[in-house]
Image (cartoon, rainbow, N blue to C red):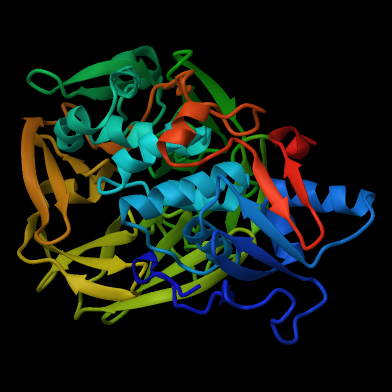
Length: 527
């Protein structure tokens, strides 16, 4: 089977046309398996399939317990050749780009029936305003809960841009589910250090949330704990909880050891341990179930460090990770497509963007942006792109410029025009859906992210009334649970009518080799 051009594959996926007689495929490793899907033959490694697919893992165990180990299998019903091709590419780590609605449905169908977690994660990464509605509907039909939640939350966050199309494309139950969710809230906290006066007066410790309905005023959310400092502290959101770690306190600006976590569902603060090396002026990023503390200073005004640590929320402990490429303080950072990126300056004209891979515990230079006397001060991720805000010509911090890096193509592009950065508002940018929110004392400005024209002002709201303004994008617990019509992955029953609507003739997978056909029902993969 030839790689479909719109899939974004390089065409190297091993596949043979159905005219190839069974058993005639040239020399193949003993661990390989020929799989027929529709009218196409695919050659895949058994270990690869078993590692990524619960279906094939259960099938191979069943074969081991049986009388033989067939070299060829046929899948019928529930999986298309195009979907299987996408699954193989994702399992091999090849990049894919899906935009056609039929491709998206085929990929979701394959992820559901073959129970392929890595494909589900890849589809979650592809959720954006172009694919959201199709993936939302497909995940509902085939019961892929993780993808269903990701698409529903994106629709909720990008409601201003997508709702009109959603009304025309989605059934009422999916619209009602999206309405029941709460979009991410723009949260800001002023600069505060614990002192005797500040401890007594809670007005100095206010955490505010932007109420975007009506006139767009800042409303009280909670108070910082009496001993919490936001001066030179790390602020991040992970699993819909707000973390404030480290910072300085007192008139001598002593480094604070420890941190605090705010749970909006319980409206309560709890303490969390600080990094093993207390620090301030560092980068804190929530990513894949961990908080990462990168660089910073052990003492306010002291030398910067390259040390990095990770806080595992499940275990509640910090552990050292690979040090950053060089010492850095308050570096710009962002995450996109489940990947983590940090900016490092390299005078006189370079901003290096490094990626940290937690699996390999390694830093890799992703790209370098070269602009004379201009460096990346803030970075945000939107879809598969990184946006880097840097100072304008001649150290102009009032009129900043922006560059965009495409993770898929590896190319930089300069966005047209200048962006007003009065009092550092641009460096407070936080992304929600297709919107970017920035804040300063005079006004809160919302931009719309566009592929062609960059960021375009969308709405102005009230400015942040407190001194300073550390920002975060926080969600209240959404309680995202799938409506009962779609059957989640792992249940024995599949919505038969939905499958018939997609042209699938049966709700079981048929696996065939040369001697016999074996009906493999869903309960086989429950192990």
